[in-house]
Image 1 (cartoon, rainbow, N blue to C red):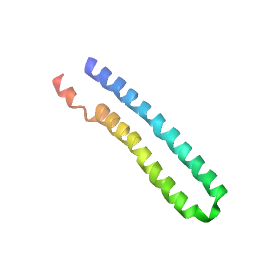
Image 2 (cartoon, rainbow, N blue to C red):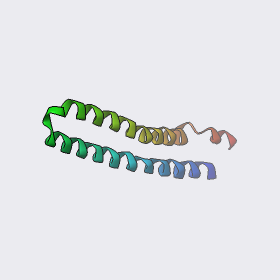
Image 3 (cartoon, one colour):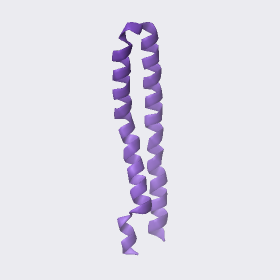
Image 4 (tube, rainbow, N blue to C red):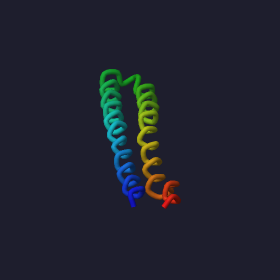
Length: 81
């Protein structure tokens, strides 16, 4: 029972990592919009760089989701029960 409880707590803690990418993506989108407003002729370059940065920032959130799913549904420690 302790293993299942610890897995649930660990999954919840790992999902806290979703806060960082959300903040980073919002910051990148805001700065991209700001740069496009200042220099509209560079819109395609700014948007491309912004999307690349957001994709890199999102990887930590995806890793946290995968860890949480493994802890909840494919936990190798459950076999020890």
